[in-house]
Length: 505
Image (cartoon, helix red, strand yellow):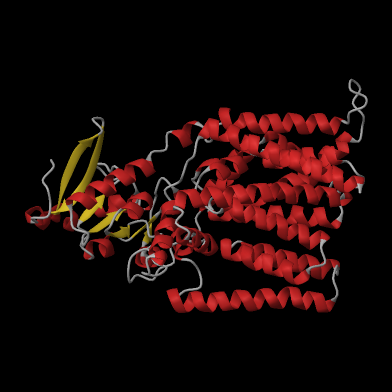
């Protein structure tokens, strides 16, 4: 009874402190969104409007990797809640649920009735700058994925509800395809450790396989492909990709030196770990290898590491607690682990302010604002029958009434599967199919960010720029907005005589 009362009290303290962390994050970063989030918003918006789960009407291409996220956003739309608000609602619910799951994990993991330790360890994880940054904004599914994965592993280790555990892994796979990797590794863990009997093992695997197969059959019939189009667009092998992946991993761990230090210490003590921690260590290394192979990511706050943040901390905690088993000489009644954990929590919170990728870059990110302004101008001055070709298709596509051609191929299978690979500044966006794009005769071409540029920036844009078709058939236009910013784009020559178009030179 006393234990239940203590757990409730410290769980409440945990939630209140989690809320305080979010308030601090909001003060430092503000609410922010990535341009890619608006790709999902457009899919969800078209589904809500009855057009289908498509980016452009009649074009059945899976340009998203977060099916369940898109469905959740659509459901909120039926409740008359806009997408940006829906994102925050889902993220906040996921974040607070994550905090409680972590508390339960440590309560089951650590012997004894030390609620203060469970509280501090939970706070350590939810104070991670990666987790906080993507909770307060971003617009993508990372926090939801992290929470479901943490819950799935908690049930894998400490629960007998096999069917629910299997269903959680299926839900995880609908949030992002990487859920399949975590299911396969978990199934392997159960087989090797023989933790459950054959009957329960069959239930665990068969339910997942049946549900996932049903989804994949639907996916194949709807889009004509099992894999998302983004896989074909982004994933290709090259030595540059391996270097980019290695550099991404290096930058992440340099941003979290305490986490790196304790993770390595635990890894060096592999033989002393129990089977759960050995499993999580192998899973984390496998996932890091996956990040290495695909070339990392370009987004803020190390998005690709977000799914395994709980796992990385679970592993690191092993060394923290081992060090903490020795009493501190100055504070003899306080374990050294407490001091280490509190220092790491403070470091995490301060990282939001002194890490450039968390503060400066996020606050200076203007693609959403500019994409919206450009879209509103084009909607007002040009026909909705026009087509825009651009590399920044998120906010521009969401706020525009026009058909959008993604020159990078995220939402276009012809570019993703039929394009050539070039040396783009962002490794994962290096595909180009200029000939195909120009055969579609886009009415408007936008280079660079969502305000556009006179000269191309991306490899795919440069391939368009040097063609005779483009040079002979498109004319540059620009106009100043807000007395400071300039919108730039190219308009197809024959459209200058369109009576529906205003002339703004």
